[in-house]
Structure formats: structure tokens, C-alpha cells
Length: 321
Picture 1 (cartoon, helix red, strand yellow):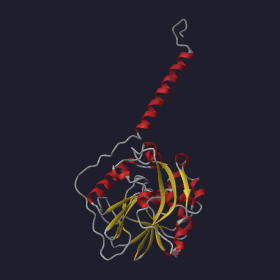
Picture 2: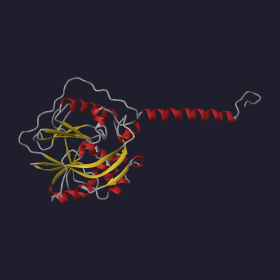
Picture 3: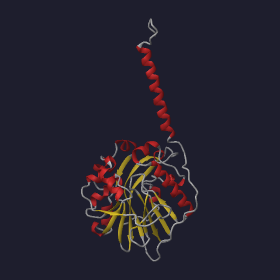
Picture 4: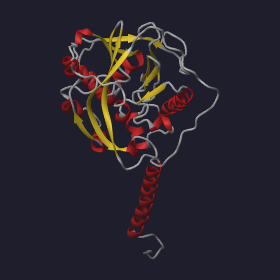
């Protein structure tokens, strides 16, 4: 209603503000929903990238330990995912090398319920978490005690990859300088790693040149059997671990993709997930495209996302005698 001088009355002003607010909310909702729709990443094709051959006569065996899981919808893992439930495994990989026993990530500790409280509330809301036996317990069943381990090589330092360190006192924790800085200054996303107290961190450098199309590399045992390359983006110092085992090469990619479709398509996480967990989504996209090209050109390569239980259960499992 207008007053005698044509000035909008308060109820009209309030209605206009409400309409604008509703429009903004609808636009934001539309953008959020759009981020879940299928969209494949662009994959540049500058040439075929072949994997360097592994060392001859170096027997590297691996075994997987399942320490827990999260249940979430596929659409939360990659753009275009459906409504079906997916099991996000919390798995640890034991590498048996002639020079020592090495773990890739640490999985859940026996105290995982307390550790879960350190995670962002939205992540807890969007998934259902279930624990299992810690890596330390499973290793003990096959006669391996923490002092026998050469180290734990972290793909990155989010809570579900470091929780199990609480049960492995004194074991060397292998990280690069960028990830160590993230542990010390990374806010909520690295809070659990800080809360575990003084761990036996051992820093490594990427002292060697390019590997499999990635800019630099670190040779863990010095024989070409276990190679680490930088893949920052999920966290500043996240890495990929290439393992040569017989005729097969495994690429343990941490959380660059939560499910193998992220590399196969390739497709990134929807915006909601990216905004919570990725520090540099553009770098993640580039690494996913690189892995997609690498897998297409190297049939002996198996890409292993840390949380894709479907892939992990195809690998050898640690079994008590």
C-alpha cells in the first residue's frame, strides 16, 4: 500500500525483501544440486605416459587390513553418483619388503569413537561410521609388534588415516614437509593428528625427478619398488604411493578419489564434499585426469582409492594363521 505521498509502506518493503531472499536461496539450492549432476573432467591428451618398470628380483608382498567403515551415498563420492549406499572402507595396507615392513596409512584406532568427535559435524551427519579391529590388533595376531615396523607412510593426515597411530607408539611416521606443516597448522582437519601428542615423525624429500607424469618422486627403499609422488590438493602434502609387486603395479591414491569412478570417468567430488575436505580442488582435478590417462595406458596398473572397499577387497587380505 502507498501512503499519500507514494512511499512504499512497511509491508510492501518486507514483501520485496522476502522475494529477493527467496530468489537467492533458490539460486543457491539450484547451484548446489547442479554440483551433484554428472560432469566428467577434461582429460588433456599430450601423449602416452608409461610406468617405469619395477626392479627385478625384489619381492614386495602386500596385505590389506580392514579397520572400520563409513556408509554414505554414492552421490557424495563423485559427481553423477547414484542413491545407492557405498561402503567407505578404513583400510590399512601392509607392505612386506626385504628391507622392512611398511604400512600405508593407519586406519582406525581402538579408540576411534573418541577420535570421531574431532571430525567436522557435517561429515558425521552425512555418513554412518562403524569400527573394526585396529591395525595394531590385527598385526599382533600374525606375530607383528609395533617395533618391527619400518614405518607408517601417510597418504595424508586426515583423522581416518592417522587414528591408528595411537596404537602404534614409537613407530616412525613418514611424511613430507608440506604435510607436516598441515599437521601442525591445518585447523580442524588435522586436529586429531595434533592431539596424538609427540609422534615419531620422519620427513622425506622428493629427491628424484618426475615419475609417471608427476613432477617429482621419493624412492622409499632405494630400489624402485615403492615410489611416492606429490599429489597435493586434498591436503597440501597428500601423496600417491606406487608399489611394484610382481607383474602388477598398485597406485594407492589416498583420498584423491573416494571411489574408483572418480578416476575411471573421471569425476570430482560434488561441491559440498569438496568444500569440506579439499584444500585445492583444481589440483585434485588435474591429478584425477593424470591418473585416468595413466590407467588407460598401463593395463598392469591398478588404481586403489583408500576408501573404495570394492577395490580393497580384491587385494590380498591379512589373515591370522
